[in-house]
Length: 249
Image (cartoon, rainbow, N blue to C red; front, top):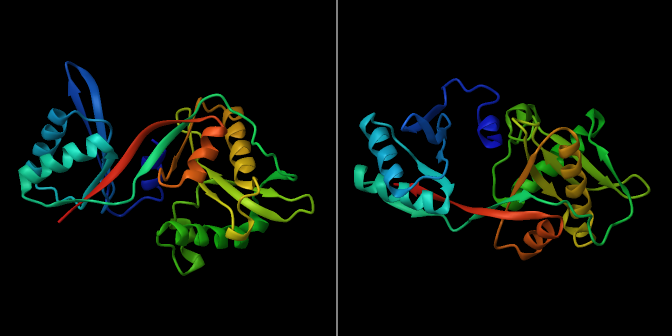
């Protein structure tokens, strides 16, 4: 839900595509695709993936790929290959979805405090978001005037500061959407890592989301990174599912 909201705001000149699968009078699955983006379905059985592939192919949609829970992604990629002759290629990078269960305090707990990011911090925030995207291989606009169009602009950010007021880590969060909040991104400059700052700011953002009325707090992490996955689980985040992307050529 939070990913869908972020991909439809600000509005695109080309409307995104939404759909749902109804069986016996009940909605069983749904999907979303941005103006030029990947297909993002909820969990599908192989039969449901085949139904969706047939429907979209019949309407002559052209898809660059699919991003979904790993079994759904594989099932739709195979169904799309059969329907269209496209060749699916699995991206090497995976992400794992985590959901906050019982929150736990960071251990170790660094000195300092959390502080909401304000207007006076904009330049600092943009600089760290640019560094974060460079670390994870994403594009970031070279012109700061394009900031409103990034996936970060609508999020609320929190800094972790040392006792002297120096920001050392940050975490962002989506607004509460139907009781859901997604933590993204979490970033600490490389020279400051390994001191507990990321854990402290992530824990604070999770607590703030629950206090603001969220009943579900989630985040995505790289399962190949043992440091971050161990950190999130120590904070009370439980693994839910792994997501993969198949590109179509």
